Length: 380
Image 1 (tube, rainbow, N blue to C red):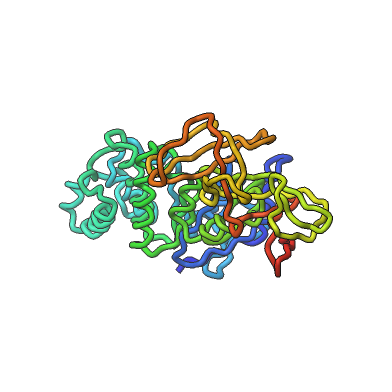
Image 2 (image 1 turned 60 degrees about the vertical axis):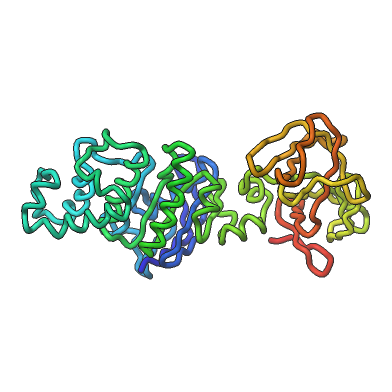
């Protein structure tokens, strides 16, 4: 069991507030991702959970036990770092043995390679444990190699194996895939997800890549400027962002944020056309969010908007049209399936329409506005 609770965690470095009163509950066996831009405090929060940093205020609890003042080695957590942190002079097997050695002073100071150790009866059980872990990670044929003889993906698996062999309460991972190439990152995302399902353990994962957070997490915490802006399942965060900052950060291509306004009755207008949606803020400036998949190319009719095609992104199955709208300096991105027809030429005039039930409307404060009986009320 590894239920984790972080309560009122704050941290300051010099005159800079890195964390501001963080509260976070992580249930046993959940895969939780801390995601946000560089400098938002996510790695610091993970290090406080691990015990590598001390919080200025707040408490850290694991299974209802306060571990705030307990040293890292006694928290029974395993951490996987961005740099892998493997000992270069030790083999993969020796690296995986190291945490066991640190917990048992009866180990020899110099660890031989796997072959000689297997001849010693007292070490056979430990090496069977290492071999079982290596089989899960598909590195059983690499146990006698040193890190310098491994690829990036193999080194990452070795680092995971060293964490797994301890049988910890939870796994903490600090951007473990950021040093891999794009194709290998996609592959390792799938591997980590399957590993989590097999181990049925608690994972706390830090990344600045929102694609990793969306594809792997049971829940994700979007962090900015030392605060958690939203915490919940990836689908909920993506489709129902509570602030404009969350909406802009989550999603690729990024969400379209379009200026809107209301008249004296609170009726919302976009590009000068009424959306027949009312808010409780007459004569207000709004921000209307529309994701590219919620826009589509259309014929010129009363519900469409004109745009000039300035750029086309070809992603194989989909085309993303970057349109310059009349009188607007910003561009609108519209997703179109390759199966929908031929590609439109650059510089041509086209029209697009929006799915009105997918509108995300934000007030001047940046908070989300939600529909309530045909009216909208700002979320606190």
